[in-house]
Image (cartoon, rainbow over the protein chains, first blue to last red):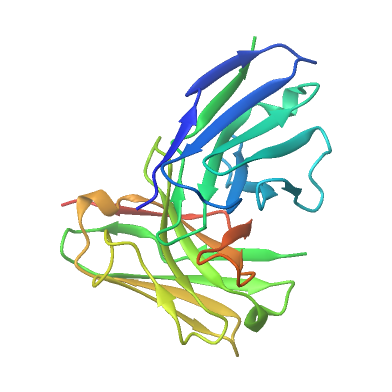
Length: 107
Length: 123
């Protein structure tokens, strides 16, 4: 199985700041990567697919990048509504696997 | 508007069975791969099962293979998960998700999610 190592596990940032979350795959996943946001008590919501494609309705302050085994999610100009947990997922090969998550809080 | 509404969760004893349902609306159900993803309390996400548009292909991780069965009824726009031989480690919120399969990757990403249904396996 492909292992997804996500970092950091938790993050504290100020409003307006730029935040970056990383995900490393145990092998090349050829951009088969998605990012999800999960607010407390809610279901996950898709942000990014194919490593860098923005899902419909997602604010442009979210962006994804990377290739091979290294991927990142960047949030520009952090807003209060961005407080959430973020998960990466690889779908290059079965079984689909998720990172352990990053909990983003406001400083 | 895409809507996915799960039902069927509850408290069940170890070794027993439970069947989850997901009612879909707001899109042409038969055109999309569908999946179940679970989340144990205060834990991360775990993919549980995927089914192709016609239902002819199904996929599972080793943790549930042989115990869980995903199925769909396109005429009713409904997705199901039959869970047998339940274990305490199956305790989780189970989400129904609409997937997207582009044919290049083996797996799918999950574009829309339901609100989830909680399954608790305990004696």
